[in-house]
Image 1 (tube, rainbow, N blue to C red):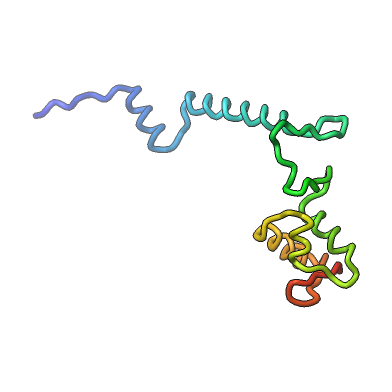
Image 2 (cartoon, rainbow, N blue to C red; image 1 turned 180 degrees about the vertical axis):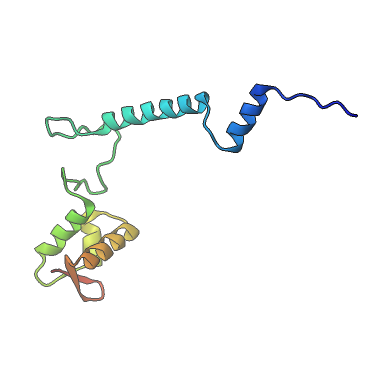
Length: 128
């Protein structure tokens, strides 16, 4: 008879923890450290209670600098479309906002789907 090597209790626990994906104390500590870093980053980038947004040196507000406090990109595009009585073209919107083509197409698609704008013809949009 061959004598079997006994398995330590610690090795057995480690095997089950790895096999069933149970996090260790070290894993939880790493996760907590990441959460602390994210919270600090969020706190440093939020708007203070005074209402003025703090823009760090070298930070970009937008290609044309049109980022108004509280206005989303969709709000900006919708405002441009609302100002035009006969409709506004894609290129004009792109020049006024400075958004890249992909972002602008997604915004227009979303606004159209929500019923906030209509397509007068290809590339021309009206406020609904």
